[in-house]
Length: 202
Image (cartoon, rainbow, N blue to C red; front, side, top):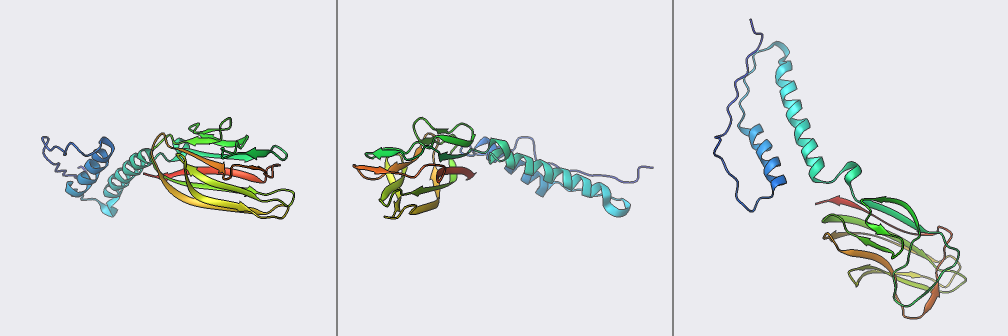
């Protein structure tokens, strides 16, 4: 005799979703609806079959959600530091953080200093700048030519400032740390300054 029985009721085959719902949303919604409408009647000591069915459905949902959210090795992320000695920056130009530590999805370009967003969503962006030789250094976190946050290295050797913000970015947006004034200033190199960011979620 079969020690358990499973009765499953699914929604109609002709059920359709509105056109404005994205394929990934439809996939997640479909699985979620299945969990709500599936009726499982298990007759088995300890309920092990029911637990296994439920666990497998949860695993599938988590896997699909992780894929949709670009988690794991597909998550865009980068970190780059400035290792040149004491570069002089002239004009309102991007600072080229030359030492690339991490560059998943290849969004950061050390030859330009720009991070080009590979995937639309929320991003955490951070940066640190440091002044040199008792002089000031002015910088900004720039998105598509717009100053988002200003940074200022004070008139002491090693005066530094950091910023950590969350931005909603669209694929193709360009983010950089930019020298903020039109004149010339010296920034501290040797790995003390960095630019970093990573994808959070949709």
